[in-house]
Image (tube, rainbow, N blue to C red; front, side, top):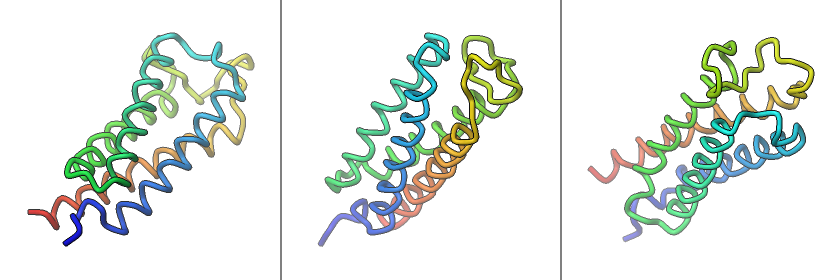
Length: 136
């Protein structure tokens, strides 16, 4: 019997998550890596690596796939909301899209990419929770 972490829902959600991850990353490349603090760069890199590991776990049907989806999904959603959608209250932890300076190069695509990523993060987190329920 196939392991539930290899569920169709979790795989589809991981595919959407991968597209969102690449879309958000493309926006950062478009904007220039010099538009964010080194703290945001490091946090983003760690999130990217953990997201790629999560996607790999899902598509290999690993027993930790669902847990990884829950953890990276919800942590990423919270992180992106705090970094991009709050005013610049967090200093080096912020890349705020609220009244950004022109040098930040924030566009409508930036907003789309960030919101797409947040939605995909939440979806993979929920799919991970559902997959975990089927194994309990």
